Image (cartoon, rainbow, N blue to C red; front, side, top):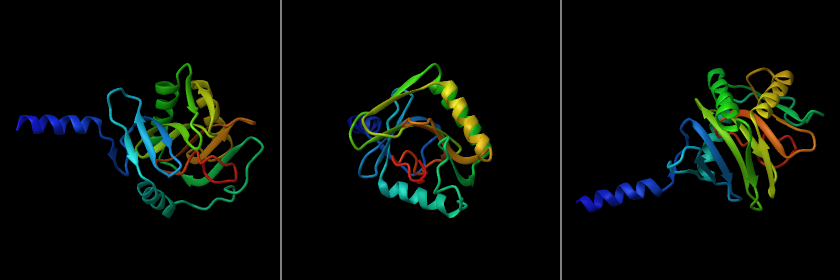
Amino acid sequence: MYLNSALVAFAASIIAVSATTVPDGVYMITRFTNGTEVYTPSENGVAPIVLSAEDLSAVRAANRRDMLSSSTLNTLSKRRTDCWGYQLEEFGIDRAYEALAEGWAGNGQDVCSDVPGQRRYVASLRNQMMVYYCVNESGKCGNCNRDDVYYAMAQMDAKCRRYEASWFGWPGSFEIVGKARQGDNVCAGNMNGVPF
């Protein structure tokens, strides 16, 4: 009896959980070529969360139903800021922004997408909203600090409505900071107007 309980407890601590809603927190996210995403919490000792391509499709379909169309979805500005045309929940974005800038980025954190065909990004999730930093090209590394997050958010807010889903990328860089709903298809690795 005790052995079974111990085995179940041990297995639960090492097995990744599959879910369509990820709890609030800051995660290093790895997107594999098959569409699966693994959310590794920034807290030590917490099991990663695995979202299959099917899980992500269900979340994105739900998000798409209430997304407004935007005339800017298929154009990019010189400043590499794109507005997606739908509003986000203010409290969640404010908390996610604060957690990414102050809680994670701080004086600088490195993120590498060093495995071919994989993308890595860090997302701060609050109330099913996210603010993220992305290395949007395989084989590259980047560094993000709180000033980078503040600057990118100011650029988005200058071009888009304040709580509108959007992203900012530095000219000539593969690094992106953005804000969106949890589960939106961000960091997709292309620059043709597809949200990333």
